Image (cartoon, rainbow, N blue to C red; front, side):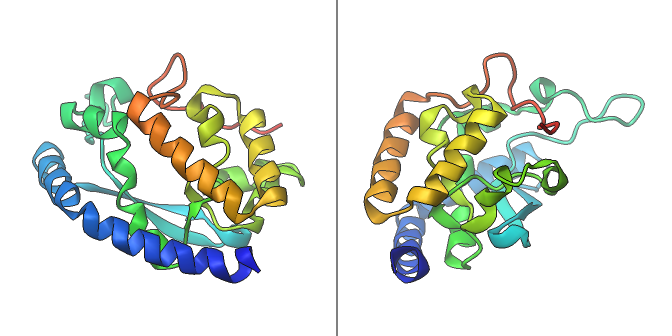
Length: 200
């Protein structure tokens, strides 16, 4: 009953209120990133949602599109803007996803939506992470985020699918707030972004 009805109701109300409360930050960040990214403050990309159905995720754009002489994008470290680094460190880049939650494409709590190219690489068990809507934060995020292996992330994701309930979502919500304040697990130990998943 919770996952099929009340969770969606709580998501919609909480995301709507959250967007209103965070609107000053939303506007300030949009303006700052527009100046840093040649008028393009948002990063929009296809991601698999419930049952693997693709949707367009919205995030703040923390890296510019600078290229080398050959036309290839520079490394993440060279493209991450100063304001983008701050936005990523404080997790402000996740705020636009509240729009995805309001539209019903995402939930506040659930497995993080990954890249479509990973879909054929999942094992049958790992693919169960798509049995629920993807979330802005999830069980894997409060247990290591980008600092743990892909296998561990997927184990946490499937565990969440099997144990989803209001009490668990509430625990994840408050632990996420705590981790945002201490900036824990945002990046893997040796990279600005997580290494690509290459299959099992």
